[in-house]
Image 1 (cartoon, rainbow, N blue to C red):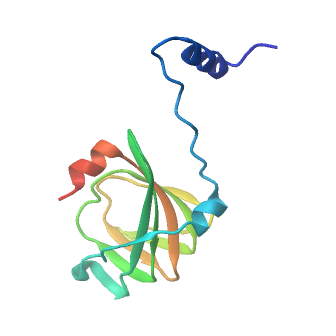
Image 2 (image 1 turned 90 degrees about the vertical axis):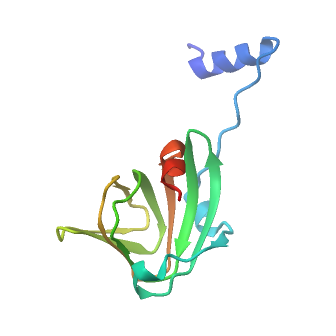
Length: 147
């Protein structure tokens, strides 16, 4: 049986002076992400909240070449009326969300579904019940989009 390449690399890294072992893997267990404690973050600006409350929570769980975070929101409809500033990969952890683009196309995503919001997207983001997601965004794109 051949030794897996990642194991060879790990053995070489730990045996060579001046070379450090690879970082530990990060568990992204969906059940743990659904129950992890999040910190309250500022609400969406009032002018983009079409309906509902704007209560939001988040926890960044990794930051490197890309950022992985868990985000949660109270039921609301949010108007994305300026082009979305980056590509965002989403895994729905709890609740559901319906995205309606400016051309009227609609898609609903529920727990376990994944989707990508492309840079430049416009439309509404409707969360009829408490909503939680894991998101992945390239760090440089996120930092360049911050005001």
